[in-house]
Image (tube, rainbow, N blue to C red; front, side, top):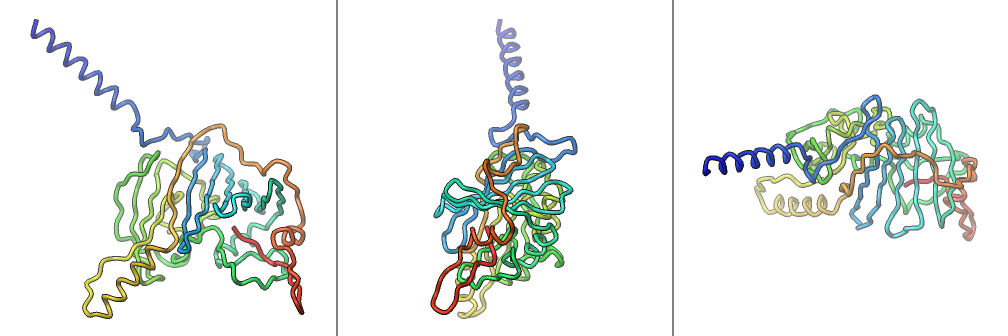
Length: 296
């Protein structure tokens, strides 16, 4: 009888273990890809800057195309977005305010130049605005210390974890352009993004990372301070790094039912008209400048 009970118990235990191994971890997702193996679904990120501004970033992929929309919590009724479709020579850029949406087209080469140079995009070169107080950066700002032409300096690559993700890797980079910090970048090897898309949305991302960065944090490396000045500078550097920009992953939803489309009732306008809508002319004594650029 004891042998029979032991056999039954062992069978139940073995069945339970096999069942546990077959079930994915609660921290993982079943990734859905297109026929070429590229991710289909929605990824939500949150970016925080040194001023405490929080921007929600929603990335929608259907394998071939991408939609990237940014909205700030401070201005929930305002958002900026872009859509890039495989093989197209232009990017659809749109602006939504109070449930009204306008969109225009930007040549792909101009859009890429904007990202490469980290410049505010000039829609209408004949009407360049004078606003310099707001200097938001375009896609790829989180990697502003990396340059596409410079070699990546990777100090380590290890396995890591992120919520709702599988096959997560963590790369730590030394950042020579910054001089005071290192950078941790998390990504999932299961979430593959078409290179043509990745170049558009994260142009300055380190070339050793072949897919979308899901989480990015800068930190001050530990140094052996030799004197009082070094100690003071080390503390300052840590504060600067701590308050700098960073991106955190909020959620990943891999689904076959995903649409990369402009908001409903979006009105297409010329670049000049779009520019005036986003940056209305401001009347001032002696001059009246129309906004000449837009950003997200």
